[in-house]
Amino acid sequence: MTFTPNGRVTALIRVHPGLVRLRVRLDGRPLDWEAGQYTFLGLNGDRQPYSISSPILAADGHSLLAADDPELEFYVRTDDGTLGPALGTLKSGDPLEVGPEVAGHCTLGDISLDVDVLLCATGTGEAPHNAMIAELLRRGQKGRIGAVVSCRLEEDLAYREIHHRLAEKYANYSYLAFATREGSHAGRHIQDLLKDGTLARLTGVRLASGAVHVFLCGNSAMVGRPTREDGRWVYPSGPGLTELLVTDHGLRPQGPDGAFDIHFERYD
Image (tube, rainbow, N blue to C red; front, side, top):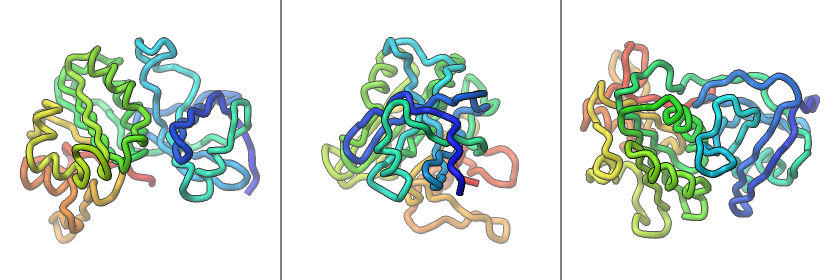
């Protein structure tokens, strides 16, 4: 596969040896994308999809990043796969192939400003949610915005300080992050926090159909995406968040039947 670079690395923020935030600027026309979508990164013939993330805040650390910011940010594990480790060796100024395709249907669309929005992610699955949070705050979302992130270790929470600043600045924004292998929530998962009421209590979101839109991205066991068989939903063993939200709270999963409350990030 031919390597055709069309962008340059502007910054590589190393969170730890296995995790980086990669910022890129295209040489020509910027990508036309929506918060929640993904594109492709390519290097030396290897090309993989990555969700477009966001630093959320501008360089001053206080104001929101402009919607037309010319740079793209990606959240990359550099200790897994083939492309990730290669991306982790890049430095400012290095060439990179970006796009040209942009895809994905897990976007904010025309959801009402008055509904609550709950975004649940594991690991780097929070990347598209960061872009969505920035968009929600820029447009003045009136409902509650709750971001919930779980990871293996606390050092994996690359955006934690940014989210804490947001929670201090925006009264309708809340952030709940924890490690599953250490700390006060060790051994627990987002599903557990939903079942015991911790998630609703700490985020303040209304878990009722029509009152909230839930976006899920990350570990398949957490998402628990169902399939449609003979006119009914069939869930994987778990249960995952989708089944819990449907059976315990009456929410509607993303499917062929029109209106829904639960959105899935997926690579088409």
